[in-house]
Length: 247
Image 1: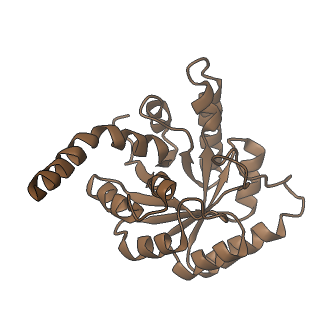
Image 2: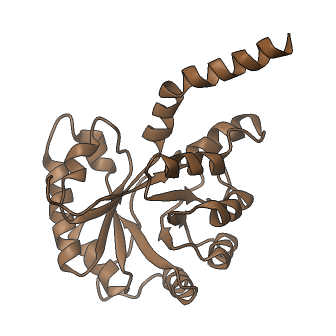
């Protein structure tokens, strides 16, 4: 919408590493992909260092921390080895997410419990450790008012609203979009910076990007998928030239 403040686009490069790990080789390089994203206008780079290291690994995040020139946002759960790696690197931002080994991708937001009830001590400790390291902390949560209130009570500066329900239902109903709008307003009124992400694509991003309270979108799979198509001709021409030159 004209006149709104610039919305930050952070590109999640996890699935560049997923392709690499399909052959357990050294290409495609997620760090090179991150540099390309920055050249193309991304405001930041997001990567999820999972406990099982299924795509992004420790060396990747170290190289990203050294090479990213915009902003690095590392996603993580509360596993001790991951938390130690992230606090040691001290990226600009870290987003705490739920994580289960059997899931294909993150399936929902963090369960923060009821307002006034004791918070998960591992979550509180992770927040405190990252704050002490100078890291801006965000919590990945469902667009639910009670959960937003709980996040504000935990003292974090930002939340990322899980847009999965919207991504799964936007073709049939506006209900999830309305919940996102209401949640974004509520979070902003609670003093939280509002981010959003999960399942956003070229087809469904526009209504979410138009929500004025949201200041940052994290998008990965759709961009990486589209890059395979729009970048393929150039990649084939380059390989063809190398082969021809060898003959």
